[in-house]
Image (spheres, rainbow, N blue to C red):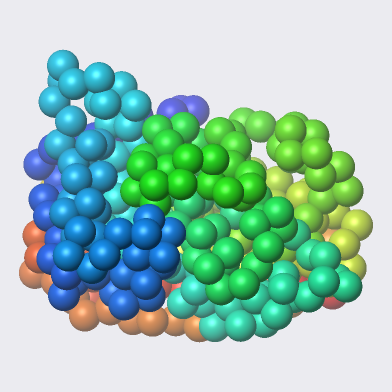
Length: 309
Ligand SMILES: C[S@@+](CC[C@H](N)C(=O)[O-])C[C@H]1O[C@@H](n2cnc3c(N)ncnc32)[C@H](O)[C@@H]1O
């Protein structure tokens, strides 16, 4: 990560030769839950879904410099979550806490609301809705407006059917700005953030986490959950041959220290639950061309949830 105030997309990630780039996807490679979601949302039959996904992907991955679509989303494209079709993994729904989150959000007496920060194409929001959560309880912030709009193309649901999407910057915006724009002045009970923290160094992660804590301020049963890159040896590392693109890996010790620091600086207290998924090492230290995300020995994914105590 760069030390100045640039976002991860400004440097490093925006390379067409990145190893986290895969040009097309086949039916067999689309996870079943994503296929079900895509077919339900788009109304397309099975044989039309794959060409549609590849076409939607091409809109922003393969955009040529003179293509007007380039302006829409090229800047948003270079992440592995887009380049490797990882948005089809539906990360939020793979979280160990997802069943509990679903029942809370479906509960008409609780009327809990969820905010997703760094939502990408908004796939997790549509999955929540597919799983029975009223769209009006789902809110999402994403830095790149092009990604929000690419989500409308992918799911063919312009407007997102009452899911509230907002272009916003978790590094720079005030939490109160989001709440005002969403007209949710009293905040959210549940906050999700998938694969966002690892784009930033420790200090910037603190800025984001404090914002998430502000978003749930005053809510006794608040929960913040998500996933982030894990590494036995914590810290920033290069994502591939391009040294500018870096990713931060947490281990159990560092993530506990991180949330302790958040608690101390915000006058709150959090209990942390973790599950690690260690990955098969790939040949290159980074992301492999075959779409497997692993990298060096000792890399993985951490599913975390913090509950206010
Ligand atoms: C690795 S992707 C993960 C997307 C999605 N949450 C998922 O799990 O597939 C990280 C997302 O965070 C967004 N992002 C990066 N910096 C951000 C910021 N400062 N504020 C809000 N979103 C940001 C990126 O544009 C990208 O969509």
